[in-house]
Length: 279
Image (tube, rainbow, N blue to C red; front, side, top):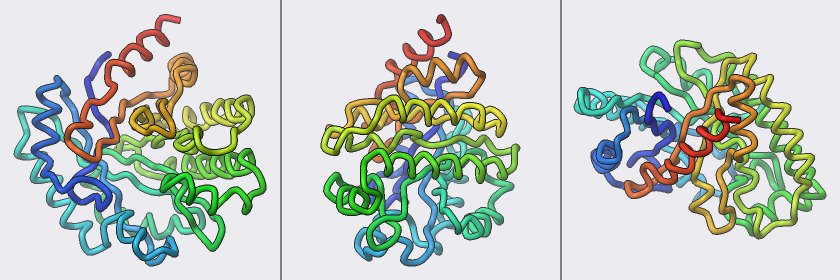
């Protein structure tokens, strides 16, 4: 392992996370031996992107706070210089049909950003755009009747991931770019109808040449281990093996939303990568 790096983390600017200052996260990362730590906060979303005002208020910072977050991240980076490398980043949502919004949002900050994680959290569903990762009951209400089957929902999700790869490929190569929690569709798999595993595996496998061609890495996101409805990484071990074999980059991501989650399941990631490289 060349670098002990947590590449997907959140801050006090996350309205569904902890109000703790980043010092609490970074001091823990240093104690655990991490040498690089990416701040990758959720940026603003278009107004009323999700038609649920209470949920909308929790999903992402308002647009007026983006400059505050960027200044905060830069200050934290400077203050921790020499103790740990802090990378300034964002976790961008892929917004089908609205990537011009994302492009506008990013334009003033492209010279300062070091990392961008591009994730799919939303799909068209009952009543408009809906979250795929809110609750199992909300997922069922939003998508199962709308698409007709769990496999059809999964196909729509993987289609959106392909779109995310296409959009991420347009971002400057001076920024480290990767696709976030590529199998987030599995977050509630223990409480939803099963999906065809072979079909899902084929869709994930088909992403690899697209990632390679776009020079994008995968966020090996371990947050699924902490979800009782999931119990697994959002990048399965077989996919780690294929990425190593095909030269697709892998970056560990705790997806921490509170300080005690920093470094969670790092040992699993380290073992999985070592085994994949040995095969």
